[in-house]
Length: 427
Image (cartoon, rainbow, N blue to C red; front, side, top):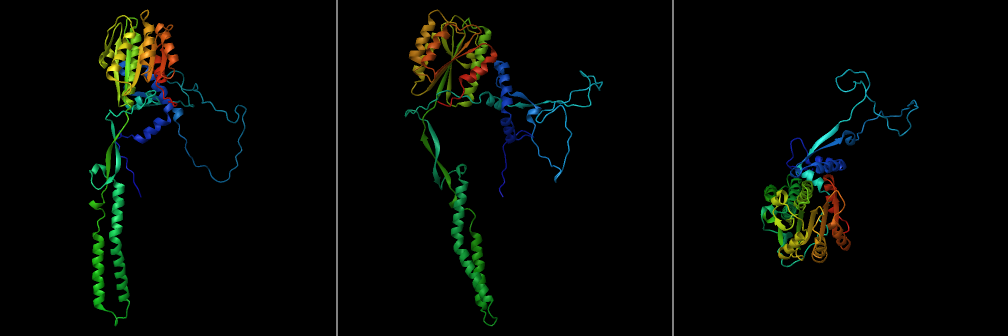
């Protein structure tokens, strides 16, 4: 018989396996609650867990019950109200009670409560980013990159205990025991048969010396048989690892945020929440993705994470300054043949008079041939601004790698984010 013992550290009175089954079964209800939570949260409150409620009627479990058994005949009266397949309404409260609550108490009917539980931070983020990925992520096969992966390369008799192959070691031990014990067991069987044959002889014909000799031989063989070890150091086998060169799938995400005077505080808050979602998504799902934060008004600057989200700097609007800075950073630090390049830009679409034309030319001729994906989010409740109209030309030229979406209010952030980074099956 084989026993499986789950030694994973679970919380008190909780089962990790059963919890995962529960989350998978009610995924639709949980995702709806998660989407509502993302839309109402503030920037600094995005990472905590979430309390989720599911109607009790949706978590009812089917059960088996014992019937009466045997053959039974039942005559059931008909009715004038219901037909086969109709759902019977729950009885409503009556007028019989005199309780202190709203309405009157009843001696019939039943209520439906909600089942509430709390998602952990990890579970919450798992539902937030379920089904998302960086579009068109490619592996860059370069000889200059020293990226290796340790892979198994056979077995050896030498190694460290952490890499021992239990299955192969036990197989070697079993084979060795068979090889060592087989001649001994064969000799023991022959000695036992000879002793039995000698003892079955007539007492006059028995040879006491032979019997004594056979018993001593049997005892010696049994001792030798018991001395064969169950496992020996000779049997141990260890997995050997070797470094195998791997193509690189490293990527960099440029986050461009408009902080000009035309961006109201509400617009900036929406942009920050969008970029915070993007930041959490990349941090959780990708190991080799670098983030470059760029803020711009009339001039663009590369800034750190803290300044990007919390600085109050403002000014006029020249969007091309940010795109030019991104191009300079790519040429200097992130060559396209070695990196997957992504850009996410958030703006209200307002721009200096002739600068939108410059942005279109920069994107179409210099940036887009190098980028894997460009996502533009325009935060405006009104008609599209000049930048949107110029970007439409770029989107028509690069339909698979240039995406544009509009955000009117905070509730649009999460749906737009999911639409921009949803998993594409035909990549």
